[in-house]
Length: 110
Image (cartoon, rainbow, N blue to C red):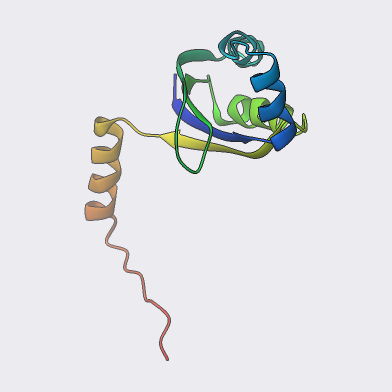
């Protein structure tokens, strides 16, 4: 199955709720991901611009988008991002397509 990286930032209200009532959020994340046919590979809280990251598998882009729409529309997140990930072999096949396509890109000119 294709892999995706999910990144999120909780709203201030959600962050406050978790500090007042510490809780494991991996279970609810796993449940919603599995509800859309996916599999949670790993789940981390993190430091920096975002509060957390997960690597997940979904059967297709539509399932990944549906899950992201469900979670993102919950109101619990100030930001929620979904990024498709490529294996090294997939990236190499893409590079080969560039090489064999013979298509050029003409950038804007001034």
